[in-house]
Image (cartoon, rainbow over all chains, first blue to last red; front, side, top):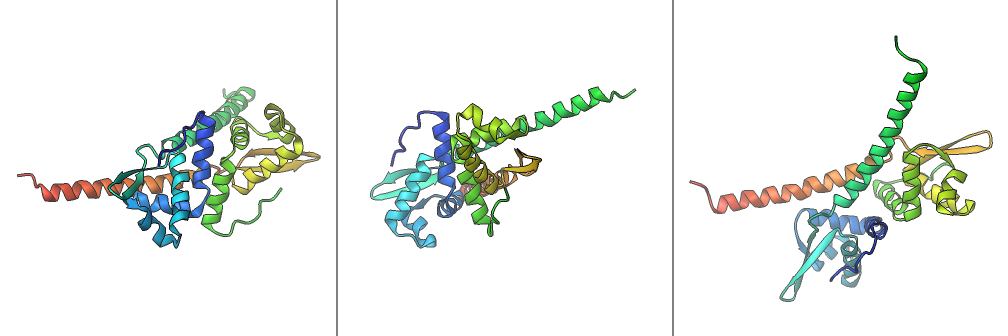
Amino acid sequence: MPSPPASSPTERLDRLFVALADGNRRAMVDQLSRGPASVTDLAKPLALRLPSAVKHLAVLEAGGLVQSDKAGRVRTYRIAPDAFGGLEAWVAERKATWHRQFDALEALLDEQDPQP
Amino acid sequence: MPSPPASSPTERLDRLFVALADGNRRAMVDQLSRGPASVTDLAKPLALRLPSAVKHLAVLEAGGLVQSDKAGRVRTYRIAPDAFGGLEAWVAERKATWHRQFDALEALLDEQDPQP
């Protein structure tokens, strides 16, 4: 099931975080991080009906977290190659900015109270 | 504004990801990572009305991303001390499981085709 194109970085992040904001979908990511699986494999441990599992998987694909391919009649889902890259980059950028704020504060305090 | 208690790790993750699944709320996190700010400071660059900004900030507080305190009539928002810890831990755990899957596959292939 191809994901609809995400036209902007903001839209891509919206879809990523929406995909992860649900316990069942995070459980699917957990299961897929242990290996590829079919919709049936993914639906069963969560006691989901297949149409509901298919909907959750479409949200995860749109969020760039999983991808799927079809061999014969069976569609197999797996973790997308760069599933966690967007998330890690987002956190790293915010943390870097946040830590620079403390460095700037420290420099300001040093300036006001110079060491001999 | 105190966050409602999050009773389970699943609920805490739901609130964290819901909080981040909105461009305006992520922009507020960006601004706060550069330093503390009031609701007015946060509403202005996003052209939000104050009640709307207050709602977004409550969602960010419930997600554990920001915290606030009130001095006189002014409430100041800042990044929560461990704002990004939950997110980083979640990503690290999934990546570790995912990478172990490749290690196991590699071991299996080595077993089937032993080197002399």
